[in-house]
Length: 357
Image (cartoon, rainbow, N blue to C red; front, top):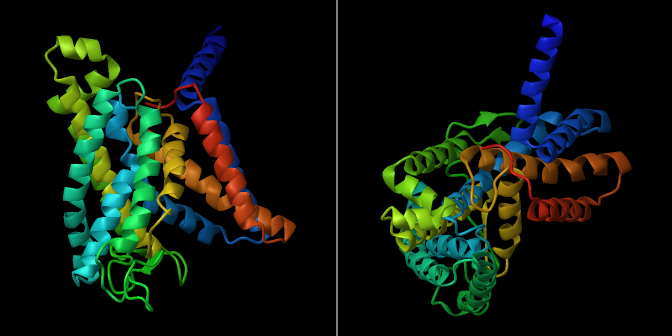
């Protein structure tokens, strides 16, 4: 009888853990683990692949983190993340234009991006406060609109730095700008842990993300953060409790926009390039999909959702092309990457279950 009771208790604990983590995430995690196990057998260097996944996590984690405040306030998934990305791009390019180099160019990029992010966030938040209930549809169009608008402005704004403008005309920014000599690897180069001759764990970038994640976690446990969460959970109750619903929503939008601006600067310093014009559009769906795969819903998200989702999404997108290419001995990495990433995005946007909190 005691043995039977122990087995039942273990099954109950396992069932609770499975329900909390979520079966879909368990399957994705199992598939990722299988890819890591297969990698050495198909000729892929396991150490390099683990390093690549960690690096891609460090590039994208802050962007995924930027979704948390808006989700908490009930504004839904931020498909308008390109608004914050554009603010970060403006900060980065103006920093280079003003002649800042090295680590100072990264610091100044954050400083210069902040007023753009705040102003855009205020306008964006005011818009979302006027269309409560239809936020996610509107945010999609806001993101697409700002990208299209900036495609014109990158050509018209008075940039003159020879590092960024077209060589023949001397005006208009190039689609891709190298960050060599500016803030390339400025965080990743802080106390890196070498894995191979050309690959290392970006300790500085991971610590920077951990710091931002801790600050968001701490903020959500303050009186203002609790009020923001209450607005997202039950706006009517929050209003009856004396909370200014519109103010909390506006604050969350400004925070998300600013974090997205910081996120794209972190992405750029790891990647080594600034990508303009339609490039921000390529980050919207993967960012949203990552937090959903991590277990978030449209009104609840946590730091573990950000970490788990980013690791799973970036791990699958990184490992699948590598392992399959090694197996079939054909270079189909881009095709496989598109199929896998879009498949995971489709799953994430159609899921209805909630996972780890």
